[in-house]
Length: 121
Image (tube, rainbow, N blue to C red):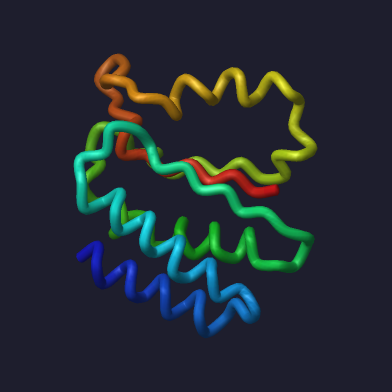
């Protein structure tokens, strides 16, 4: 199921995001590696670029198919976290988020290691 969803993601990016060919292979590669293993920490992807380059578009595609991509995540139903306009956020925000991005065991029954964090700048 995850493989089909990743193929759909690659196709949708290729058909709709022009001039950003590196996004397709890198995004799908990292997502595939994350869902095909038992990750020791969450997947963190950072998309940078000017307005209109497709950062939010790719994030919305990942959000649409996240049920299929992270089907193995049961303990953390909110498994996709998107932080938009990181360059405008207060500096202390990353201090709060950083512990969730490191190698951690489940916290109060919630396993963040299978989560996906997207940072848009």
